[in-house]
Length: 199
Image (cartoon, rainbow, N blue to C red; front, side):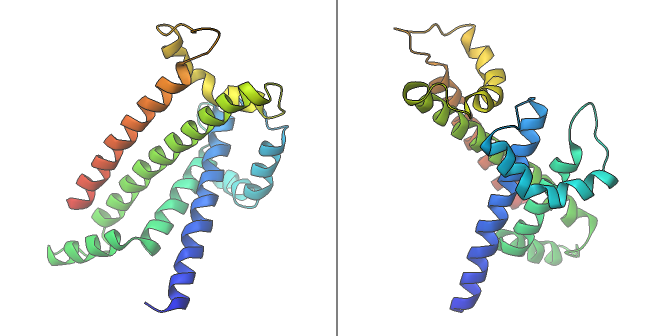
């Protein structure tokens, strides 16, 4: 692989993955009713409007969910996987050996399922990141402009833990347990992705 190919792969993977994270963050902010009037919300909408607004003309919302953002994130991650992943190339070769054309419905369905699994994994990474940043800001800058955004993104996931885990010495331990459960879910999703790829 030439240096130019490696550079192109790095740029596609890095910029594409960053864009998918922005789309996912936008979807979760809208779903969890997080405020967009803050530096992060404005940054996210500024970088994703060019794709989301045209997609909304074609893809309607459902039950208050911004499906246009979610589907464009899924399509973006599928494209990155199809272009970048060696596993996808191996999967296409295996399907061809089994008499399935790489462009067949089975291959497309497999890529779509892997994209959903990857979006779930990326969502968990976003949740872990939000929980860690929120915990740090609660000590250093509790009244930061992004505090309401982080609270909106994490509060629904803290609620089940707060029923059973009391604060200890005015320190909330629920972020620790949330991160632990999210890490376990990431391990399970990684195993699921490997099983799907091995089909």
